[in-house]
Image: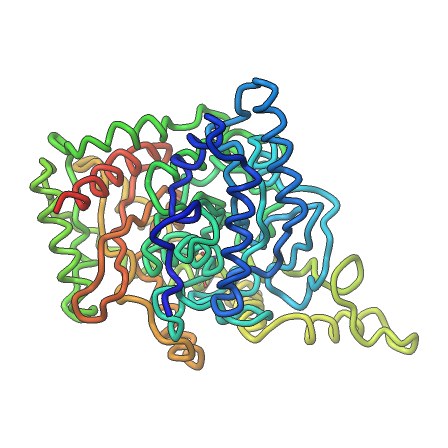
Length: 495
Ligand code: GLN
C-alpha cells in the first residue's frame, strides 16, 4: 500500500500552491484543512505521525481565515489558511503537550510557545501535534512513549528522529508544512529519510520560548515542507527576535523567501561549494555515496565550483555532542519532579517528597531519557567535570574553528545528511551507540550554532529509499541554504 503524497487532490499540492488557491478564493481554507484531516484519518493508523489531532480547532482557525478573506482583507501571511503539523515539543494552550513522554501525559500548557503564537497570528490552522522521540532524544521516533512512527515510503522502516512525526506527516500528504526541532539533527535527518526538506535555522534566530528544553545551547525549532520555497515561507513566519528567549538574537531575519525564489533559476555560477573530506566515506551505504557524488556533479553542471575542505575535528563531534547534550539534559529535566506538573507517582500520603520524586521520575521517563540523565550527571560531577564536560566544550570550540576556516574558502559546505537510508524499525534500538552514530553528519553544525538544510536528492539505487543532501551555511546566512537548496531542487527537476 502506498502511504506517500497522493497524485492528485488538495493534499498533493505544495503550500505555495494551496496559499495561492485560498487567497484567490478558488478554494477555502476549510476545504484544504478538511482534506488534510481526511488524509490523516485515512492513513494515520498505519503511519502514526500524530499524537493529537485537533480537528475542531483547525477548522475554526480555517473559518476565521476564510471569513477575513471574504471580507476583502489581505491575508495575514503568505501561508494564511494553509494547515500545519506541529511537533509535540512546542507548547499549545488548546491541545496537550507531551514531548512524547509519559511524564507529561495529558499536560495542558498555560501558554503558547512563541512559534505557536506566530503560527496562529499568521492565520495557519494547526492540524495537531506530531510524534517524536521522548523529549527529542533519539534518531528514529522509536523512543516515543506513544508508539513508533512509520516511514510512509516503507512502513517497516523508521522515518528518522527525533521529529519523525512531522516528516512522516509531510511525506504522507497529511500536512503540507510542519514544524520540527533540531538539537543534533532532528529536523534534517528525518527530512532526508522521507524525501522532504528540513532546515535547522541559525541558533538564536527562532525563539525557544515554549520549546521544551532538551539541550538549551543546541535546541532550535525550524521549518519543514516538501519544497524549498514552502520551507522558506514557513521560516519567515517563525523566525525573529523574541524578548522571552534570552538567547534570541536581535537582527533582521535573513531574506530566505527571496533566496528560494532566486535559486529557482538553477544558476549556481560563482558559488563555491565545499565538500567535507571527512564525510565522504567508503564505508557508508554505497547507494547513498553514489547519490551524493551524482549530486556534486549536478551542482558542478549548474555552475558551482566544488572545493574539498578539511574539517579535522568533525569526527569528534559525535563524542562531544553526546557529552554536552546529556549534561544539559540532566540539568533541564530536573524540573520534572512530579511536584509542580506532570506525572506524580506513589504519593499515597506515607512517602517523603524525595521518594515521590524518585518514583515519579522512575515511572515517567523512558530508558533513553534516563540514560542521558545518568551520563550527564556523571560527566558534570566533581572529579569528572574537567575530563568530560570541559574537554567536550574544548572540542566544540575546535569544531567551530573548523567551520570558520572552511567558510573563508567556500560559501556553503555539503555532506550526505545521513550515512544510510531509512533503517528498519527495531534495527538499532538495542544498541544506543549505533543509533548515535547515525547523526554523525548533522551534529557538527549544532555544536557551532550554524544553520543547515537537508534537501531531497532522489532515491538510493540499492535500497530505493529517499536520500538527502545536507547544505550547511555560516551563522545568519540562512538565505544561502535556500538559494542553493532551491537551485539544486530545480536542477533535479530537469530530466
Ligand atoms: N538524535 C540526536 C539525539 O538523540 C538529535 C536529537 C535532536 O536533534 N533532537 O540527541
